[in-house]
Image 1 (tube, rainbow, N blue to C red):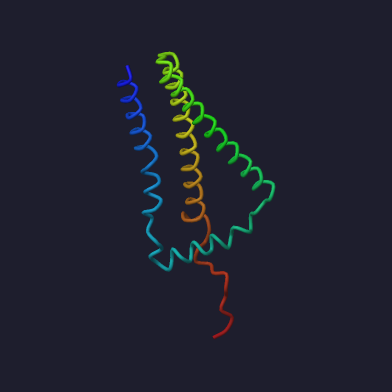
Image 2 (cartoon, helix red, strand yellow):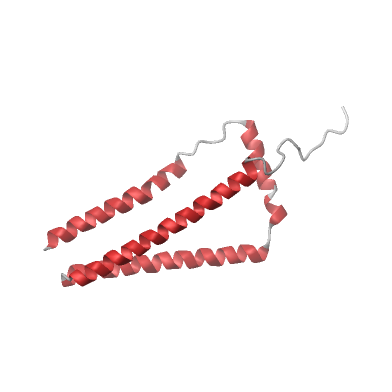
Length: 144
């Protein structure tokens, strides 16, 4: 009776690993800037950060971020508790509840990943797809 639970746990850990680890490794593989044009674009992006800053919006964003972290932590804790209850009690009902919570947690994490990807695409479109005129420099040469 213990062997199927161990196998199910290993399969669950492998699926989580395949889903979580490539994102971590991909962020570290990003190459450094290799051209002055990209450097110029990014420095202008950093200079433009202060232009649209809104304290209320930033605090709302932080509040949303805290809520999302809290939700993920609670769902992970519920998944852990139901897994322990299913294992200790050899209960199929708790195992089904655990699988349901894992499915909800997976859906929620996928939704958060989709939101992050959409925000990255929006930022890329705004700053790198002609949203601004990058040939216009902030420093003008007045005389020769």
